[in-house]
Structures are given as structure tokens and as C-alpha cells.
Image (tube, rainbow, N blue to C red):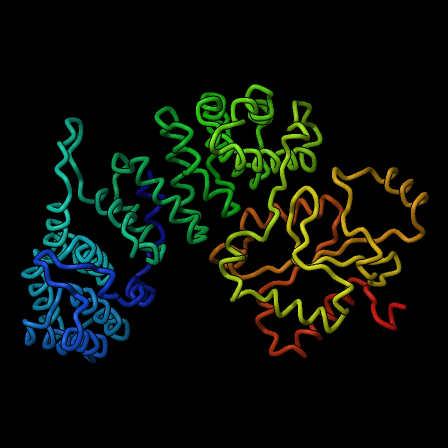
Length: 511
């Protein structure tokens, strides 16, 4: 079934994946099996430059075959990568170049016994991308060398080892593979038999999709189907990893038994691994499909007392705080126990790790300068954390007439839990003559989306959804629009149009 499901879309453009693999660094490959170090100076580095600048497959072969005393193990991945770049412009080599490819593969076969494990992995996967046949001499020789470096494993008495499944597992485990095109994943999974798809392989696939924000429906449906079929054999620690990409990529699978299966697993495993249980619920929270029975269990006094004092206590309490917020805002029909007030902690008190890691690529500083010149720095707040713990990019207070108000004169926080309209009106009549509205400018950076750039990641969609339910008016600033602004004057004009479209006024005009 998986073969039929996954073989529908394959791409011949795998050579372009070689362009995504960074150049091989000699110092990363370590010493070869024979003890030669690849990071020597002079001629060794000069040969690498010659390989990287070769203009034809024949020239690559000439540099490798005519300099035997200078060639080191790490030069062969360099040559394969350059070969892929040369073949991108001419995917079908001439008969002369085909003979050259055969000579190059024979050269690698003769020397691969001296390669270290990492070099073998790199050559193996580059050769796969280049289209060398899986049963050809090059891949067979590299695979044999790879296996010879592994500790011996007794053969399974129930089923023999099959090359297709091993190839997929090795590929997903190799660090270089993390940049391969998703079409290669689809093809590899389609070629594997159902009995080869072990929990370990599927977890590696799930982690790969989540890490690289690949919202690939075929692969996600394959994971969902595997989870349903293997339900009885999976524990919650494995399930949390399989479910992770669905929440992160904001993808609800079509598999009809997906949610009933997870509810049964949660009922069976909830008391065994508290952190895994909460991680599964976090993924389901992003998908807006929290099961009431599991919530009643994690909010029960016995569960909370059990996690207190354990190493993951703080992270579990943070996740439970977010789940409690979801119950408050999104599940009015829930009547079970809730997280006690004394156990609640701020959900996301700081900008998310991905934002801090990519701050030099962010538009936040540019937008902040535009708002400072447009509104004045006293009229907005940056990186303000609002209850129950969501960090906002930029927050404005606006009067009912649309005037931007100085932040020093206003409480920037809306009450949490949100009050009813009658309570808000009563509070307005007793305390102020002009209730302020809170407007949150939300930066939607490129990495806030799945790889296709159209669907917000689950955590981002959750934050925007909850801020909106708490009463904040959201003004998204998409990365496509921000990237099209050339210089500060254009950005200020863009921000002015965005704010005026909401009916906002400021300065002398706002009065």
C-alpha cells in the first residue's frame, strides 16, 4: 500500500540536490583509515582547488589519477560533488564521458578501503544522487565498506536483511542527507517494503520533516498510516516523535483512525511517561483536536504531584500552562479539572529560539526603526510579553477613534482570562472614558512558515490564534511584503499604509 501511495510523485531533478550540499571540508572528515590526514597544507589543498574548478569529468579523472601521492580520501567526495555540478547542465553524458564515469567509479572502488566512515557515507549518498545504479559496482563497494565498519549484528531469524530498507535508514541517519530533496525521500520510501519500515526509520523520517519544515503530504500520510497499523507495538516515547511533524507543520492527516489511535495510546500510556504524554498533547493542541479524557488525566492532582520534583518538571508545567490556555480559549465545553494557579508559569516569556538564532536575518530591527520614525518610540512597545506568556513583536494602544496613544498612559495588557463583554463595559464605565484597543504587529518571517511558504508553522498559528481570542487585534506583516521594501523610506510608507488601513491616526493628525 505504501509503495502505491508514495510512488505517484518522483522527480528526475535529483542532480540539483548536489548544489544544496555544502562543499566538503577536509578538517571535518578526519584522518583516513591508513592514518593520512586530509588537512595537510600545500599540494593537498591545491589539488582540492583544482578538483573544485575542473571543467569536465575527464579533467576530474585526470587530476585524481595523475597525482596519486597527493590524493587523500576527502578528495573523492569533492570530485563527486563537482561531477554532479558539471552534469546539471548536461544530464545525459556523451559516450566518452560515460567511459570517464566508469573509470572514476573504478578509481573510487580501488581506494575506498582507505576511507574513514564519514567519507564512505558522503561518497555513498553523492553516488546515489548522481544516479549510479543501486546494484552497480560503485554503490555495492561503498555499501560493503560501510557495513564492514559496523559492529556485527546477528541476522534476524524471522526475516532476512533487505538492502532497500537499510539504504533508507542509513540515508536518514547521515548528516549530509538532511539537505537532500524531498523527492529522493519519496522515492526511497516507495522502494522500501512495508516490513522494512521500522519505528526507528519512521522516527528519523518524522524528525527530518519537522526539522526542515517539509510539509510533504505523502510522507506525512505514510507516517500516520504506520502509526495506526503499528499502534499495539508503539509506546508513547516513540509516538511523541512520530506525531511531532503533524503539529509543527500544521497538518491534519486524512487517515481516519489517526485521532482514535492516539486517544487509545494516550489512555494506555499516559501514566508511564509524563513528558511524552504532554508532548503528544502539545502536537494535538496545535492541530486544535485535544481529547478531553487525556486533558482530565494531565490536569489531575495525581499527575501534577507525580511530575513535581522530576527533572522535566519546569518544561512539563510550561506545556501544561499552554494546554490550560487552550482549554480556556478554545474548549468552552470542557468541564474537567484545570491547572491550579500556583502551578502556572509563563508559556513563552522570550522570543522563540528560532527567532533568536536568526535575528541577523530578521526584519524586526528594520520595522522597529520604521515605527520609531513614524510613530515615535513612546507610542509602541517591542518584545512585550502579555499574559499568559506570549511574546509580541510590536504592540500599540489605540483609542476608539483610532488615535495611537502613548504607552506610558495605558496598561498594555488585556485581562486574562478574558472577561465577558458585560464585564468589559462595566469596567469601562467605572475607570475610563476611552477604552483602548491593543494592536499587535506580527512579523511573519520566512522561517515562520513551512518550506512551501504558504502554511504557518503550528506554533505560530497557535500564538496568533490565542492572541486573537484574547482580544488583541492582529496586523500581520508577511515576509514577502517586507522583503520587497527597498530602504527605510519605502518601509515607512508601507507601515503607514498598513496602519492607516486599520483606521489608525497619530501625530498632529491623531490629536
